[in-house]
Length: 96
View (tube, rainbow, N blue to C red):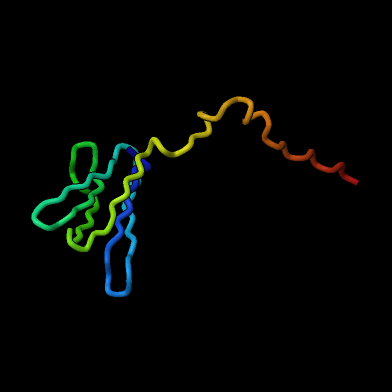
């Protein structure tokens, strides 16, 4: 789903580096596969065709953090009290 995001933390010579792969368009999702010493994170279309890929040696991967799209707050999910309590802009000053 659009908004799916995966953070990959990899050990490097100068410490740890963080990479992020995000599903950028509607209908795309992020999938993680691992095998034969390689971790692959890919943004795929609805039909399963990869659009972008990131591959890392499994021995260097420190952490994989998945952030599903459902974690993102939406405006319509806010309770009505919070929406009505939002400050309203001041009316324009009268012209002189």
